[in-house]
Amino acid sequence: GAVVSQHPSRVICKSGTSVKIECRSLDFQATTMFWYRQFPKQSLMLMATSNEGSKATYEQGVEKDKFLINHASLTLSTLTVTSAHPEDSSFYICSASPPGDAFGYTFGSGTRLTVV
Amino acid sequence: RKEVEQDPGPFNVPEGATVAFNCTYSNSASQSFFWYRQDCRKEPKLLMSVYSSGNEDGRFTAQLNRASQYISLLIRDSKLSDSATYLCVVKRRNDMRFGAGTRLTVKP
Image (cartoon, rainbow over all chains, first blue to last red; front, side):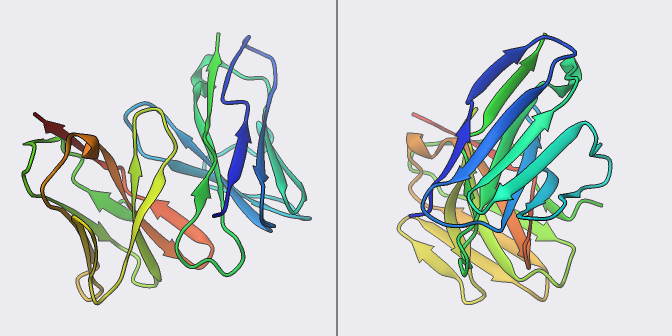
């Protein structure tokens, strides 16, 4: 089945630093990947849609300059949280689907970010 | 109004019970429907797709009513391992939207 690998699984960083999260499709090519954020006891919220070879599409209220997305290849999308602050602490998850898959998306294992 | 609405629960049921979750969606252009399961501090995993004709996978039965824009999930003979949050997911083209999830706890 389709596998999406996300790294790192957990990161603790100091306030003001930047953190990069990687999302890889291991056995398929993904022209589109999605980045979600989930705060404790809340639902997954779509942050942005990552498009290979073009700019990402951000959801309303998500700062594109703070959450930098790069989708330079068909198997890799990265999310960089720039100048992280404690309120950015959250569970970040990516997802992707193989071409032609009509049965939903596969998720990465998520990255738990803690900003201290 | 949220695009996908679910009763957040929690649902606390004894082992062996039957439990039903409901979900409504607001966008009539939605094309595909799914139930995902999310365990605490884990990523969501696909439980089953939902078809208009209704579909069953073991103890799980999913139903879709497009006219009412309503989706349901029925779990029969609940097991302790069914304890999780169940997410209703609606897909439109390349865009998936999640409900807030319904928390289920199955107790001995």
